[in-house]
Structures are given as C-alpha cells and as structure tokens.
Amino acid sequence: MKKTPIISLLFCLLLTSCSKPTDIFSSYEEAQSALISLNTALSAQPNSQVTQLSNEQLPFTDAYLERRHAIYQQLMQMQLSAEQTNQVNYLVIAERFPERYFAWPAQTNVLANMLTMAKNDAQYKNIEQWLRFVESQLEAAEQSNLKLNKVEHSYLKKYVQQAINRTNTPVELNAALSELNNYLADYKPRGSIGLSGLANGSQWYQSKLNYFANAVLSPLEWLSRIDSKFKSMQSQKQQTTVEASNASQLTTLLLTDSKIAGLDWLTGYTLLPLRANASQLEPADELLYMAMMETDLGVHYHAWTLSQARLNLLKRLNISEEEATLLVEDILFYPGQAFSFAPQLLN
Image (cartoon, rainbow, N blue to C red; front, side, top):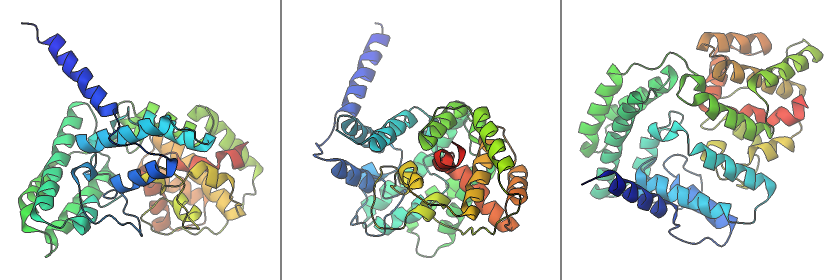
C-alpha cells in the first residue's frame, strides 16, 4: 500500500483545519484583542485582563500557531486601512520564516510571564511541557542549520538560571528546567549575530526592511542613501539618551499614549511606520536613527560582529559603551524597526 497519498491527504486536511477560523470577529479591534490575549506570555500588557494560561498561549506550539494563523486569515478578509493591510501582509509573510523554531524569543522572559498567569497544577504541567518543547524545537532547528546567536543564547541561559535559583519556582518545573539548562550549557551558538546567518535569513530581513521602510529597496541601496545623508548632516555629535527597556527603542520613544493600534507584539502593538511618520524628530534623534539604520544593515546584511556594531555606534553617537551595547541588542532583537524613520530621513 502506498502511504504517500494518504500522508498528503492528511497534510491537506491539517492545512484546511489550520486556516479555518475558530470564531468570527466583527471588527479589526476584536481580532487585535484576540492577538493581544494570545501573545500574553510573549508580551504581557499593563492592563491585561488575562489571568489564566491556555494551551493556545504557549508560544509557537501547534495550538498557538493555528490560532494565530486563523486570526490573520480573518484579518485578510476585512476592510482595513492601508497601514493595517501592510502590517497584516507583513505578519503573514513572516509565517514562512524560521521564527517558530525559536519558541522562547530572547528579548522577553516568557517563563516569568507564564508563571504570573499559571494558577493550578495542570497549567504548571503545560509550562513544563513547553520548556521541553523549547528544547526540542532548538534541536530540530539545528538539523535545519538554524541556531541562536550568542546574545540570544546568553539571555536564555540567564532566564533559565534565574528560574532555577528562585525559591518560588514550582518544584514541578525543576526537572525540565535542569534539562534545558544542561542543553543550553552544551549549545554552540552560530558565529554570525545577524539574520543573514540563518537559512532564509536574508529574505526574512528584506521583508522587514520592506515593511518598516514602506519601500522596496535592497540593503545596498539603503546603505547608499544613508551614506549620502550622513555626508549632508553636521558632523558634530549630539547628546543621545538610551535607556534599558522591555521593548524596542522605537516603541519606547513612540508609545506616548495608551492607544494600541497594531497587531505585532514585537512593535508593542503599534503601527510603527505610521507613528514614526507622524513624529517630529530632534537633531539628536535624527542622528540616533540614522546610526541605528546603518548599524542594522551592518549587522543583518554585512554580518558585522558585536564589536564592529558597537564601534560604529560609538563613532556616530555621543554615547557610552554600555549605551552602545543596549542599542546593538535592540538591533539584534528588533531587526529593521529603525527603518520606520527611513521615509522621513532618507527620501
């Protein structure tokens, strides 16, 4: 008996079930709220009403991905503004890329967020299974030439060690945490810190540039524009303020009110290109985002090292080495976001 047609049929049925919405949203705002709830473990909102941890909220599991995909599909059928449509298209394109293999994004302590919501033994069991899932996904990723960079690796090790050292971490998680800790101790991160070091990473990065800049230009074309802009700017360094934050530098700068307009937890649920376009930048901020765009391309396209990226920021900006390190990590965790200011600064 030939198994291939049966497997193909089952796969098709799975795809059909994945794309079938579990509920119907009457508005963009309802779909947006569903995504915010779904992503609570990734980005807990200050006024969130979510107090329970469901299977769908375990990041990048099959249940999570199916739910997110269904929401995206419904959004694609709605009448949306141009900015909203662009973001939905960007998020749907991102589904093709290897994000799902990295179930614990290093810029957020997912475990700590989960533990604030877990209320019973069953939910602690879900967290235990998710920790094992994180390890299994990293193992699967290695088979596809996908590895964490050394900054991501360092942060995950720190989060796991913090959980092991806490006295209030549920004992049910001890074994899974210990196994993940041992796995990460032996893990060899990839040499390149930028997206170009991942399989399909260059295409993933290009999709980010296209969305945030709202223009389709190659990295080399952007570099040419940035170089020309720097030559036309005053050479004197401006004092720049850089602070540690749980969000990207852009969302920290732009989230000046409580309105949540977007769909992506990585942008603080803000339509960054729209908000950036409406922002009036001081000379110091113009210089900051020019330097961040240049360094972003250096890291994710030219495969700069951490040291090269820091040195470039120190050359361009009046900042300390510690502040330069914060900016480099921001660029690593939020590729392309600085290009939200490209229409304002580079056209």
